[in-house]
Image (cartoon, rainbow, N blue to C red; front, side):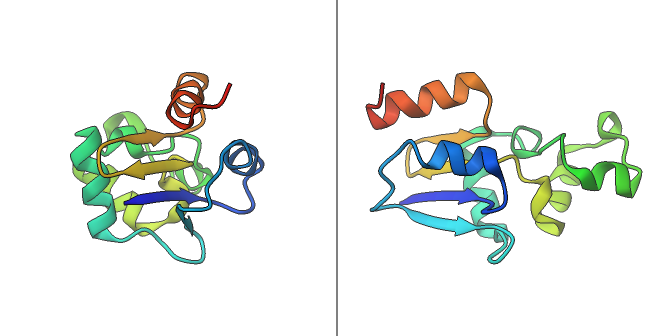
Length: 117
């Protein structure tokens, strides 16, 4: 399995995806084709945390008046399944590895994985 979950409208996602050869990867635009419960559970198996998959920058947090500090794992799971902006992105997932988000450490790990300088 080689999947990347992203948003076409996200400049950061586009910039990160452009750095790698994804010709043999399944690219999923999460607004058009939302993440499934099974896919989220696969991600969870590799991260052991729904919070690690949750975007704390989602505009939905303010719109819904959510207090992120009070959320539990089950809440993170339900929110990610409920609205695509709650998934931290991009998410690169293989059978053995997962790379979540756009922070510098994650992008560096992706570059090493793809063998890109």
